Image 1 (cartoon, protein in one colour):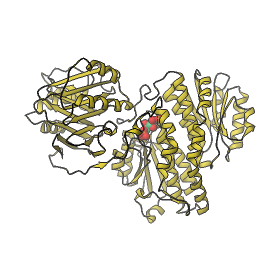
Image 2 (cartoon, rainbow, N blue to C red):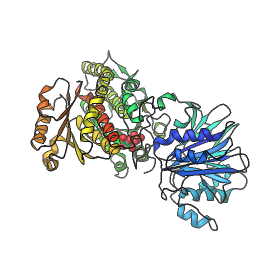
Image 3 (cartoon, rainbow, N blue to C red):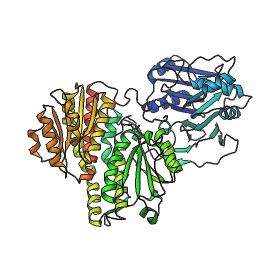
Image 4 (cartoon, helix red, strand yellow):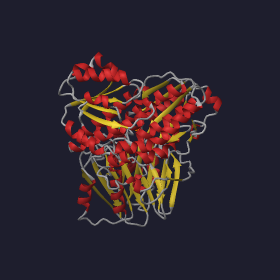
Length: 607
Ligand code: F6R
C-alpha cells in the first residue's frame, strides 16, 4: 500500500527521495509525489502513474534542497488523480504532509475546523494538513501533536514547514514508520527497503509516538508531550538482496532464492541427534507448553494457506488440535479462547491490519500470542510476546513465494518441537529433520524444471478458468497454487480437495476446463488417483504434479511436472514451487505486471 520516504541531512534530497520511491514501488501505488524545502520555500511535484512519470516531470526542473518528503499513493479516499496524490499541502505549500492510513472522522474535522479553507483534493490527508495548519503557531511538532489529538483513525505521517526548514515531524498510529540513522543524516520511511542503501541502523516508531528530526538528531515523545527513549536496531538485510540480480522480475528472483533462504529459516533451530527443534523465541517454559490444548493460526491470503500446512503438521506430529482462521473473520467472531490456547500470527510483512487486530483480540482473551514474521521490527514482531523470524529476506514481489516456504519451515519446526514433548519419537523427529536438510537440494531440482513448466504454462495461458486439486497436505498446496495463478495472471481458478469434486465441482469439467492435480506418492496416492481418473473420464485436460519415477500416471496426464520425493509432510515445500513457476510463466505469457498485479498491495495495512 502507500509508501513514505523522507530525508534530512547534507545531501541533495531529490535523488535520494526518487530512488527511495522506486524501492517502495513493490508495495503497489497509482501516483507519486515529492516535496523539497530549499530553506526558504517548498517545491511540490506530483504525478499519476509510475515513478518514471514523476521523474520525467522533474527532469526539466531545478529543485534543490536537503530536506524533503515523498510518497507513493494507493487510492483510498478519492480517485487516482494528481490532486489526490501526496504530498498534500494546507492552504499554501508552506506546510506539506505525506500520510498513510485513514482519518476516520475527516468529515467531522472538516465541518468543525475547516471553515474558510479551500480543499483541492478529495482526500482525508488534505484535511489533516489543514488541521495542522490551524494549530500551527511557529512550532510544527506542537501543531502536529495538537492536530492528532483531534483525529480518529490511523496514520503514519511526516510533515514539513517552510518556516522551520531544518525539521521533519513524523507520527505513527497503526501505520508503520521507521527512522533510519545515518552520519549527520536521517531517513524516514514506511518500511526499511528505501533506506537499506544508506543505513542499516533504524529506530522503529511505536503507536502514539511523535518524532522531531533535525540534521543534529531526533527527539521522540508521545501525544501527551512525555519524552520517550528508544534504542536503535540493526537490520541485517542487505541492499543486494533487495535487487533483481539479473532476473526479469522480483517474483522469479524470489522463487529462485528459496533453496538458500530456506536454510536461513532452519539453521541453528534443529537438533538432528535428538530429532528435535528449538525455537527459543517461543518464550514458554516446558510446563506452559505441556498445558497447551489448542493452537490457532491467524493469517491472511498466502500466509493462511501456509498455516493450513502448519495445522496438518501440528496435529500429526504433536497431536494438538489446531485451527486456521482467516484473520478478518476471526476478529469479528467473538472467538472462544482460554489460557491453554497458543495463537500464532503468521505474516510476511508483520503489518497486515486484520492479522494484527485478530492477534490483539486473542491477547485480550488471555491466549499466548506469538508471531511468525518476516519483516524485522514490524508491528507484529514487536506486539507479540515472542515468536520467530522466518528469515526469507526482503520479499518485494506482491505475490508471496519465498516467505510462504519459510512460513512452512518455521511451522514444521514448531510442530516438531511440540511433538517431541509428547508423541513424536526421536527416530521420527530425526528422520524429519534429515529430510528437511535435503529440501534445498530438492528445491533446486524443482527449479531446474523451469523451462518445462514455462512450456506447460504457455499451452494453458488462454484458459478461461482452471481447477487445482489436492488431498491431505497437498490440498493447501492446491489452494496456494490457485491463489498465485489468479493474483498474477488474472486467470480465474479455484482449488478443491479432490475428494469433494463429486459434490459439485465435477459439473465444471470438460475439454475447455484444465485441471492441475497434485498426485505425489503419499498415503492418499490411490485415493487421489481415482479422483484424477474421474477428471480424465470427463475430458478435462490434466496437468499432474507427480513424483519422479511414477510412470504409471503418464497415461492419465496431458502434461506432467515430476518433482523429487520427500516425506509427506514436507511435500508442500517442493510441490508449491512448481505451482509458483506455473503461475509466474502464465502471467508473463499474458503480459501481466507480474511484480505489481492490479488492485493488490504488498502490505495490507488497512482493514
Ligand atoms: C499472496 C499475497 C497475499 C498475502 C496476504 C498476507 O501472494 O501476497 O495474499 O499473503 O496479504 O500478507 P502478510 O503475509 O504480509 O500478512
